[in-house]
Image (cartoon, helix red, strand yellow):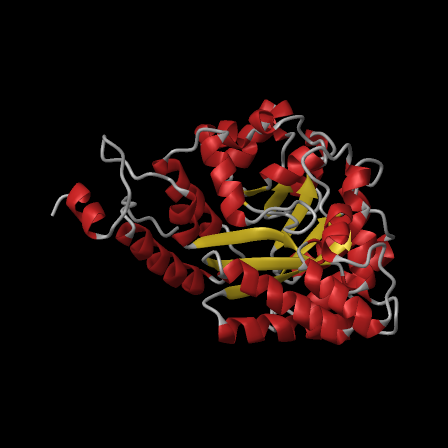
Length: 370
């Protein structure tokens, strides 16, 4: 049976040349992985209002639409500072075990609803201890939500703990020690997040030395609001296995080639990069340039609520605004699963299943599980 005949049989829309039409419905139906998604930036607005009512938190609006206008920054957001303001609100309703478990569960449910089969949810434990929780209870609550979601939906959830650049190295060390304690208990990685300018990664070398000595996966926000020097520090001073964003990596060709040669994945987030003004316009985003050069780029949401996006939206923007083709999309999907913070045997099993599902959708390619 020819590819065209298979597509007709499976009711897959094709154009006059026989190429698959990359419709929103088709992209949503594909298995996908998401590696860069913040818990506190990805809550449901209805849940924020419900938790606030239950726990006595005052919100700046008393109905969903008005609150949405405050929390979703929109494409016309003026700066990173403006982009970060809504997090003060979401953090206020994530101060109990109930709220953390519920938010994690619902985020996984939302991801599963668009066929995200693997998601890594990241959060900073230090942001959730304002009203009596300790960091251990914070992590336990998130893990409870993740494990329940795995039971209820066709999704695997990894948890990444974030240190914050503008806190003290001692604070980052505490989170690193927590990651060590929860290694093999649900925490799959460690991240350095927060403002890059004036808060270099090298200040937190001690925490990352501990993380590396315990063979824990690492990622770091770098090259988003600051130049390629930030990416250089992330790779060479704190041994990041992946780079969050890396939007400005193109400013240093030598470092870009190093990242490519060493297959260091980039966790790219198109919509949020425009909103934080890491780039001026969607059309200026470097993800296609990086992809064409052979870098291992992955596509992610960053913050589903704050950015008003989901993973299907990000893929459609890549297709409609940046020229990603059918072949590019299947490679982007595979890049996501290849770059997951998973043991190799689990990763191979997941890749085999995903490859079979993509081929069943008419997306054929040579198998490569490394």
